[in-house]
Length: 86
Image (cartoon, rainbow, N blue to C red; front, top):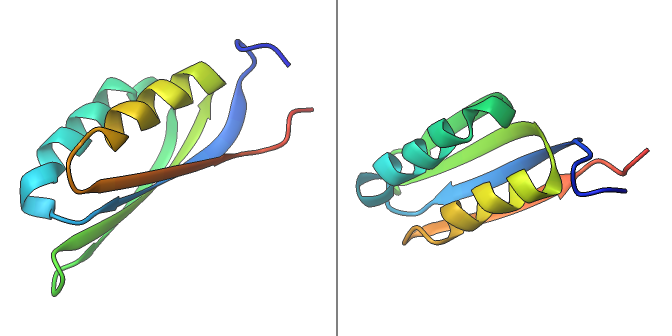
């Protein structure tokens, strides 16, 4: 598999402090909007958390760049999974 081969996958994001991190998270997701197929955000208002699931169709480099930027935001945890290469 080459680094330029596109893969289908998802990125799971937990935002522990919505007031502090939501603007930065939305900025990163907007910057990578070209590879995002779908996005679902679920706020947990009582705890101040948000859980965001993003479906992506991207190269591993593009996914790595996006998840790396998200992971550098304070109070944000991020994980990804990709479909097996064909």
